[in-house]
Length: 473
Picture: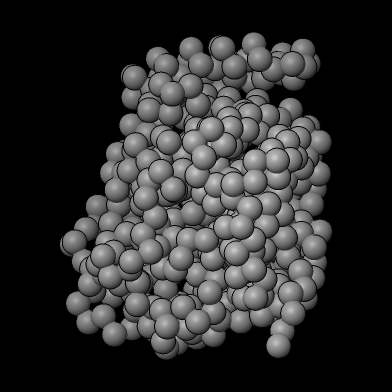
């Protein structure tokens, strides 16, 4: 029988089923132990993080006073590390050809109703220009898994095309990649192509459930999929993003699995995940969420996000347009630091506004435009940030984490966020966003503690209004 080993290269050992189940039992046993919970909360408030057992106890406790304290600490930690900044991005679907049999995804190979499509380089160019015209600077590339249509050569050519496009004042400055698990050699190619974060969702960490949900195709191999981040790290990609699709399995199992995965990466490679995503199952062509009995309520979803923020305080947390405006507002408050905006989940959805009601990977809940979302964030007091400076300045992996843990990253992030917001307001914003944004920039400038940094930022903000672009600390 496999034993739990956080440093093991084997998925069955670092996501050990016996340890997950023991953690769930432990959390249930101690969910009312006020003294223990108090110690865990005191530890969390220092910003040093929590292990998976400590976090599981907090999530299991449903005492309302404890829950409110969890929310309060999550707010404090997020403000301390990220301030009011919310990083903006958009997904770009290149192809929906797929040979996997994932039962929760309409791209699955047996789906004969979904129109299949793969973008040409010219079509990618049009999509990217449309995204640039919205104001986006950061993309997440998405494809199905197919050995003929979605080759590594196609992906590398597409990345090169995206980075090459300069339209008016637009430019994509960071391309993150969310593709199927692959080899160390292919991860090296992606690193050399200049990608930002490599993203791969585990879907569910429960091996038995995973195999039921993935009956065929390369993705059906749980261990190969679960060990993908190790291979990515070995290939030189030091910013990786993990996630679970809540609703596929019991949420407790996937919550613990996410944290065990993060702990494994930290233990083996010296740096945990750059981001954690927390999507929930959504309807799509031939996919009914009611077929999945483990759905997570909005209240529970908010608690999951808050406890994750306590457990991994320095990790970016992503919520997409799968979630409604109201749901996103609730989790922004307690931990989320990155949002997608103006998203399309169809291949060709931006330039052509292509939507036949069948070819989306999932139905979008938050259908507002990017400018509407920017205005909403500004009204809530957040700074919509289009910054990609850390990636381009080499502040990735352990270099980013050391700056984040020391609190020094804010000296870069705050002014960079303001400068990229100024670019957005000058080039793309409607009147509402412009008016609120200008006031917020003036307010946030006064909060920059370093006189030198504030003076440089003020000078650069003026230069942006004069037509110059792409300043960064």
